[in-house]
Length: 293
View 1 (cartoon, rainbow, N blue to C red):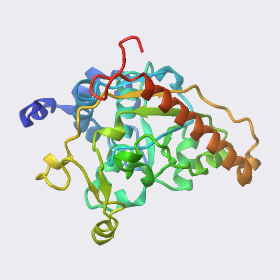
View 2 (view 1 turned 90 degrees about the vertical axis):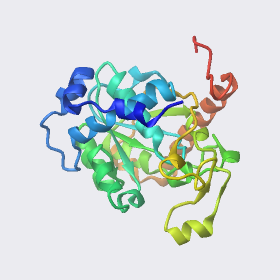
View 3 (view 1 turned 180 degrees about the horizontal axis):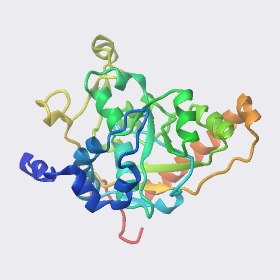
């Protein structure tokens, strides 16, 4: 059983020094680099051991096809969203920081709701997340960044357990952005996140009262005291990263709604088919797949 002392042991005396030793390429890439969106390498370094522990030891995440994400240049990463909390984004960030041959950050576009929560909004900025607007997305891509988008939005993370791994219709905004900015799209299918917080029902009236996008009832929330209510189940994860898709359309086609909706659905269905395949191959939620998978 993981205890609070285990988490305390993850915090190094000098987070920046520890990050530099563990991921020197990532550290040198962003050390001293200004960021208009508020990324703070020290804050990232402080929290990195906890998320790395979740990635390597708790969820035992496997990232297949990590080499499909380019080490330089602009790209848009899209995938299925799940887990009530955006843990899937954090796990992809850890894969890029510690497993990629050319480590780099992923700038996830995040709903206004999270940025409006006191303290949480600042923390999200400092760990690299960006408020979801077209202007911000274009700036990031112009800066040759990796932009992470979950086209299901809050509908994805708020799924009930009965709806797990059923991909909600993708908003076509990521396709419009890819065409306008001439950026490749990299689809990712993630299995594991839908089961870390089994959500039995969403209480819409309570969500409205609490000004939250949804109010779930899980095994621990809201029954357990803080922070126990947020401890996830130790489910095995697999992220299957597809090869980049270069759409090949000129920028002026970004305003073609019929085209962008069609492409968004095609990518959505590809991810859904991949999820279905991965779920059929999985042995159990806690043991995952065969070692050679």
